[in-house]
Image (cartoon, rainbow, N blue to C red; front, side, top):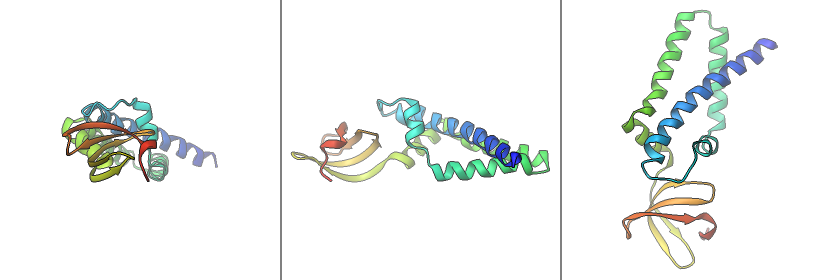
Length: 147
């Protein structure tokens, strides 16, 4: 039983490290690029996919603890880390952020205004939106939108 607990703890640690570098790349090259007023911690916590995090925790934990070949473990962890670290490169970090957050050709409706454009980032209370007519980024409060 204690071995299962160790596997989960090791898996969580490895997954947290990978997640950190993934979200750091997105933060540096997508969030900062669009000047979104957002702290890294909020980005990290609000956009965590719990199912993927749980599966990664189980996978990496059991692989590290129960796989016999240290060489295979090391190679797999290094390759995984290198893939996640691609987000630290400017183009990949931006592309990854765009794939996760950007929603193209969206129409948002307020009481007085209708906005047509792209959602750059949707946060807890506000949406950063690129308006096609204004040709600039605007911030829209979620509470003002008509659902």
